[in-house]
Length: 317
Image (spheres, helix red, strand yellow):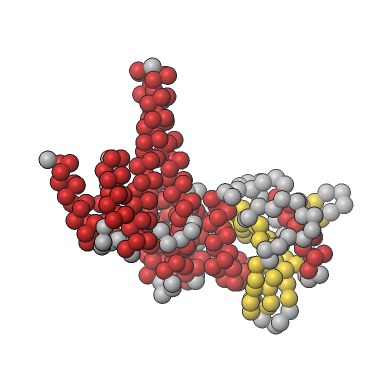
């Protein structure tokens, strides 16, 4: 499953009624996600969702929704096939829609050939105003802000709104993790900024595992790139080998930091932001391994923090 599809699934789970109201103008009384697929349906990606909706007047409706990070030429045909199969299975009227996250000049809200004329709803998220969303939209829709018009300037405010929301911590963690993943479509810097500020809460979200994996891969890629650049002067082969080694080491360091924070959280409760920042600042693989051993046996966060200070002093002397 692609990581943007994970973010889409989290948002559908947490905010589908508001997505239907705000983006499709459907007056929803209740909705449910249809997980099962009609017989003989071809492979379907997790960014395709079918919702069974009861409208405010009591009438039922199917909504076939695709959340798409980029336009694909055959998207309309796939959506049409999925719509027909579910209509046959459910015998209900249907609305089909695409929520497009990034601009593409090829995007169209219809498909036509010699026999078929099919029109669906195309919601261009990138044309919507980020400031309007932050000021007036429900909290659960704010993870979409980075992808909207003026979104990069409004990310911090949207992030703060989510972090302070009167919601269970797991839901806030899911929303922040989803927003972080979607920020990856815009800017690596935005991703790093949110992680540096909100990692303490985000570790409660299942989507956070995707971010950790992405971080590991990014570390390897950066290390390889640095090594290759050095190899121009020192020899191409030597540079590639050095880049791979640096990338693997950087990835292992990132994994160990995250594993250490997760271990402390599970055993002793979430560490303070200060402690998390101190752990994330450690670049020494051996020290991180030593601290992980301490975390397995320590009796409290305070005791672990004291051990961390001792180890830091001993390495400085």
